[in-house]
Amino acid sequence: MPFWESNVFGGTFSFFTAALFFYLGIVYGRKKAKLEYKLTSTRLLTGYISDIPGLNVTINNYPVKDLIITTIKFINTGSQNIESHDFIPENPLHIICNERIFHVEIKFPSNPNINPSQNLTNESICQFQFSLLKPGWSFSAQVAHTGVLTINGCLKTGTIKPAFPVR
Image (cartoon, rainbow, N blue to C red; front, side, top):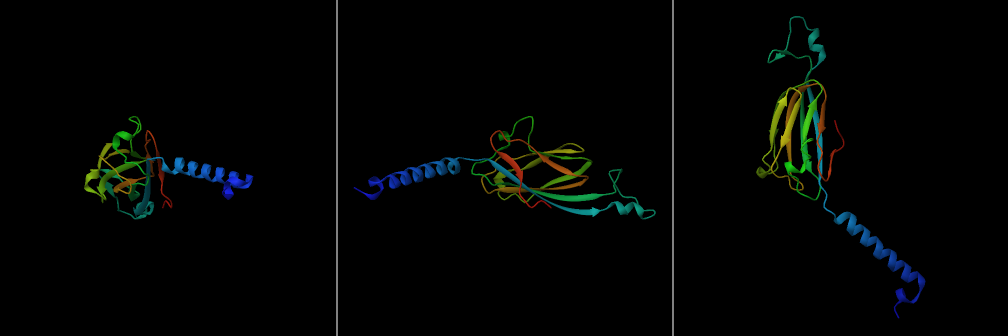
């Protein structure tokens, strides 16, 4: 009779080892939709610009004191493909600015099949869509804005979270 069948310790050890592998197979074998984003911002104009006499900066007749260019990189870090219809219709992938968004441009898709696009719905909200984002694929958006950006959206099954560090 083998050792693991001949005593209580061997049987208990075998049982818990099998249970551990079963648990790990369930937890890590499950498909997960996980969209992460990284923000990198560069401030082009600061509030000090208004201290210079005679200098007024406007964009489309809107006075600008602060101008920030933020690059947002969206990357699928999960194990499942993500498509635009995987988001809850009432809460698609979008950014909200507490002041004003002047321009949004899609940059650097890691694969041309992603087909990313943006829709500036008003002066402070921009919605993103894409056809397919496979695991490891990414795309970036450059946003010219004033104020603070917030990334929003809700996947039907999965998570959206920042990839740290956020700068």
